[in-house]
Image (cartoon, rainbow, N blue to C red; front, side, top):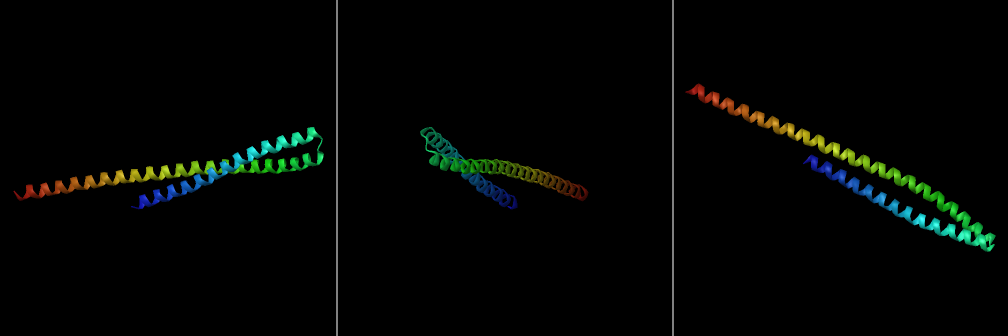
Length: 126
């Protein structure tokens, strides 16, 4: 029962972390598209000789580029954390399975010893 609760907690944590990673991926895609668009606008204004508009777009491009770099770093960190959580869950499950198998073996051994003791009692009574 405790194992089920632990696995449930791990899975809930994984789901929350996957949601965070997905949100970051969406932000990165949005910023990539915005970066491409702002870069094109900046270039167009420069070619047209609109220095003021080009400067405004260039400032926005710098901001978007910084945000994009930061979100990519966060996304990489979130992905690494997700992988670590998956490994931790798998290790916990494997340890619990090993413990369960050990307990099954101990129970079977105890049953065998009990049966042998009963047989010895019956043999002694004859």
